[in-house]
Length: 126
View 1: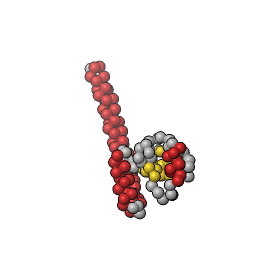
View 2: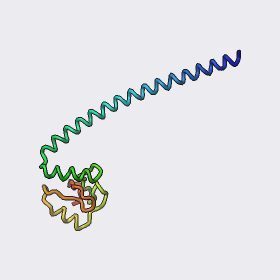
View 3: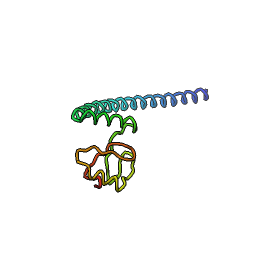
View 4: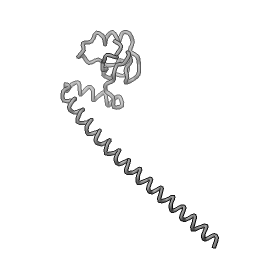
């Protein structure tokens, strides 16, 4: 009789633990579903924004950018930050920096190391 009571107590404990685990799993699934919805909405917005920006860029430049994205793991352009290409993390040589400095503001310049399009900003170190 004592063994039966002990077993029943153990079954009750294990059932309660299972119920708690199932409840936790359902809560986690609900949070996951909310996160998926948020991510999907962000992807949609980003896609719309990208399409709007892409419409204003010349087709030949979009073609080059798309090709570079495919070759470079999804990143076709990188910021030039403190004389360093943020795509490949290589600091440009003095010669390359001179070439970038001499280029017109609307001219497309590329990293000599990785080939990505360099995006020049005030922090480029030029």
